[in-house]
Amino acid sequence: MKHLVLAALFGLGLSGCVLQQPNTPIDDLPPVQQPSHPRYAPPPGVKSHWSPALGVYVVEGARDLYYRERVFYRFDGGWSWSPRVAGPWQATDSSGIPPGLFRHYQNR
Image (cartoon, rainbow, N blue to C red):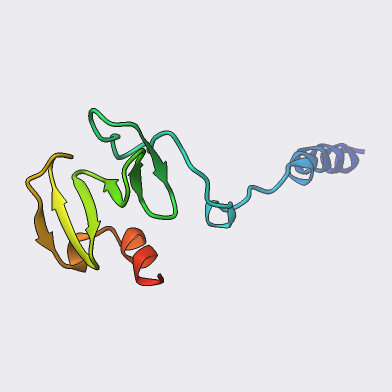
């Protein structure tokens, strides 16, 4: 009888595991726009949204203007960056660009 009670309790303990839905890995979720990112603050003074696919904030109302810890701008097939939206802009190569943003333009 003691073994029957232990088996029943053990079975009830495992039933919670069986009834739980498995979590979907984050990498399998579709890319979406988010208002912000938990680690990177949004750009000051401009409207933006976080793009998980690009790994940067997309500045709204501006073409090819992105932000992650500094402002990035795509211009004529080259990259420039600035700590402020208004500049001054400094040229950089792909090593100065977040990988997701660089890949987005590389595939165009």
